[in-house]
Image (cartoon, rainbow, N blue to C red; front, side, top):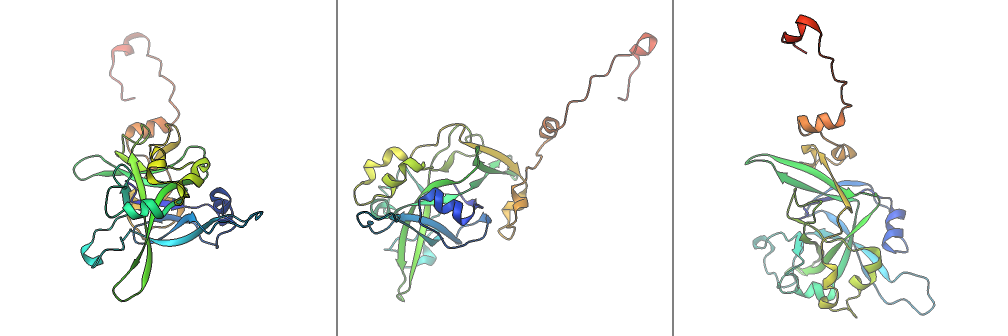
Amino acid sequence: MCGRFALTATPDQTSTFMGLDDVEAFPERYNIAPTQPIMMVLSGAPKAPGSNRSDRTSMLVRWGLIPAWVKDTRQFPLLINARSESAVEKASFRTAMRHRRTLVPASGFYEWRQMGSRTRQAYWVRPKDGGIVAFAGLMETYADPGGSEMDTGAIMTTTANADIAHIHDRMPVVIHPGDFSRWLDCRGQEPRAVAELLRPVEEGFFEAIPVSDLVNKVANTGPEIQERFVTSVQDATEQRPAKPARRKPDGDDADQMSLF
């Protein structure tokens, strides 16, 4: 699944990667959580012939999709993720899969590995080569009984690849830049035409870095939550230079016990 992620790239870096003309200034966000605003990129109005302007637009939506048919949001679960294998069949996501597919720019995401009945280890999962990644997303505009509207969205997930499977069995769907236009083209590409994009990203794309439990608290929003955290004696040993082997003493001392 994907329950926390980050976007720490600059607006210029984000707009260039996503193929946008520009985006409004925004701060670095190290710990984006459900119900908070997230950036989504979607296909806009077709550009005029000869125009150099992008036909993509960005908007902020509430992370947690609410289908248009929901009557009482208090009785409806928070849909932050949509399983790619069944989204086109689910009433909650079927319409968005056909009409409102989006991209979610990110610098990476967080995942937790269950280490015991009460212990979980957090990981910061980022592209091994750095930069920005785009997750597949879905958007719905929800109108409450009072008439006010709210744009909402979910991040799509798929089976984890070998880089992530030891941490969790699910991961966000990654859409590569060469496939942005196909994924966003809801007018010309039906869900079945883009189903092949909903697969685990290739092995070696991500690296998983163990981090402290600071990320567990939404109030912690600084870069320190992405710092590597030594999780065990073995990890500590791997990060320290090996000590030179001690020479065995000669003579009678060779059979004596040593404290070193």
